[in-house]
Length: 524
Image (cartoon, rainbow, N blue to C red; front, top):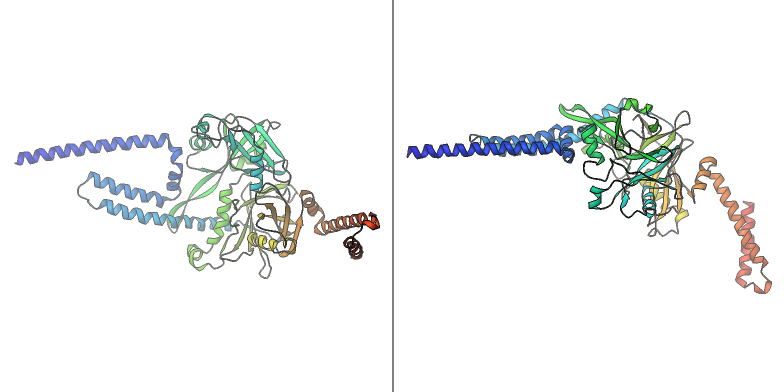
């Protein structure tokens, strides 16, 4: 009896020993697999890296499972581990909010307060969706489609650009991108450049030649990277891919460790797949990067979001005292920050990330404007005066629709999209684009003065818009009035030239009314 019992205990120990060996082998295999294919799991590991509470949640759960497997003494370790897992997972959500508190503390002492706006230049007239639709309509390559759109600065002007990536599951792994397409964002008419070059390392392809796979493996795994944009060079025969790098700096919030994003430089990738890392301090030395955006859009947006947390998490969640939020337009696929071009103190065009902040809640007034230098990351802030009126992006659309100019427009057929700021002689305007629902062309350019939203200026094309920038709205009104007088006079002359017997009573009455109208207009 005792002998059988001892034999069973020995067999059980042997079985447990074999199970442990199997588990160790499985863990080793999984570890090797995770290392070799680590780019696939970058998102999860970066969440653990930037938010230690998230990592500890999985450590607690894993420890509970392993202790229970390897020991019979602690029967409740899995339950305890699960409790710690849930608690730490919830705690990690608070850490994300605390990160914004610490970001605001970092930038608040270095914010440059401004009381007037810099002058706008190289203003983008073609909205994102119209640009994408026009580029797609001009794409005649059956095996390729557009990648993500972004901006590049060419000769001081903004151009939308996107890679032409393989379209289809099979060719996604077998073909390289065709090159890149560029469309002038500063014109209302379509001006497209297409550059043919196979990109050995690029977005939208798999697996090991994928842009992010290579960045994670060859540059820095413990960083994030922005969407790429493309710079043509060598007489528009070659393409340089540019990606901004986001590093993470160890910090703490209420004694809880966390990592905050910081600008980590850029990575240049040529058509052959050669990569070059450029630190933030060395960007000015790279000729190809002169005047280009380098500071990541993602960090700029975090700067804007952090203003809601300047009084802490409790105020942001509950009290809402002196709290602001980003003035994103609902239904727009293009969120703030917007990339704009302004003049520096020497009159040179420089890129800036623009964000409008509104008071928390359902109000849509403009409370603050943030401009983030898209090269170095310096933050500039403009605040509305206490008794000043200023409308935000959302309300600018409503003011335009309710103006007398558009009282007869059927808004079931038309849309006003993408409010972009324009700074002219210290005054801020919201530039809206009027387009049909197909969003393939620009019907009108509409300007709303932020501090006087009743002032709605409607321009028919890019030429009138440029005239507004150089001469002002009064000259445009005078030009339109002269044109109207000329057209009325021409119509009146045609009626007068008709034989008397060919004039109906209605035409006779119309002739008299036109003469009176022309006389009144000339007097005014």
